[in-house]
Image 1 (cartoon, one colour):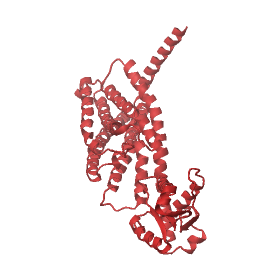
Image 2 (cartoon, rainbow, N blue to C red; image 1 turned 60 degrees about the vertical axis):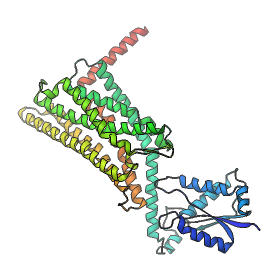
Image 3 (cartoon, rainbow, N blue to C red; image 1 turned 30 degrees about the vertical axis):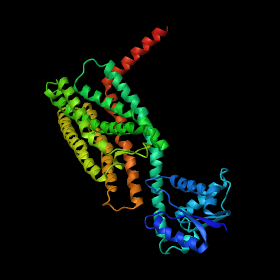
Length: 457
């Protein structure tokens, strides 16, 4: 005698896990004298939609294979499907998909949905009103759960759309701006000073980072890393190297500008070209050593198909300590130094304003000083705060809900492209706003254009 079969998809949340539903499955199998297949599936927020649907659909198609059904003694004409809550949603979804799948000849005959979560938009429907205070799943908890699911959807959308688009804009604009700067310095500038050396290193640093963005864009758009373990590690390393070398070069640029106010003829030791070259080499070496421990935390999962960012991988206990040290040494100390020297520059400019009959000539440099500090703080501060919060959220000592984790991840994702927006702003702010550099670059381009036109004739 062939048996009935019921495929059961359950609510996969922490208080009702797979093993809890195992008792229900055994009881149901005994009472109905049927084969009960209870399916587990991967959870959000670690695994994003449509992973959950794919897990249960693959399992269902496997079970509906005639040979599998025969091995379990199941009648192909007496197969049903059931599920509760989120499992009811999955049961309904795979049933509809199965009807349109020409590869599966055996179809389901019965569908039973137990308080299924089929929509999370209208909580004023009769079933919600009538059971508003029902135990286990009251209306308030369902509304909170819907909000949580919305945050998880936001996180998925940010990773698959926001990051590729934002990084794509940064790549296009940043490549154009930094290439123009490098071209101008290499082919237009004859007499270099300390400021030019720092700014040139800054643009090289930005270009190196921008070259890694196409891989990241494809990774987030396709949700799959296809470049292997070595490129994953090197990509993340270059990303952080750009961040902290940029911070240090911007800090020394602030020092150099302060010295230029006091020593306009560049007679101070720190303004010498050789000293600027040595400082630049020291910055590259310091950042390289400073970031070596990060290689221990960045890893590639699932046979190198998932290149996880630094804050989301590795041992969170050790990673949190290292991240706090990196924040303090690589960000807060340089920020304090930059603010100190730009504050001294602002005081100097205000004193000069009082001495001059017109304040107009000094308004622009004063505004640039204020903009430099504001941009530095706005771009880098949110990222460092949310990176540490993201790592802290992975600690076992922090008991949090999936909704809280999704909110933290979403905010962290928002700050990541902003932190590297400096690669786009640096050429505009530090180079192209300078009338001398812009005039020098345009003259060189006009000269090449005229030569090209003459050659064609």
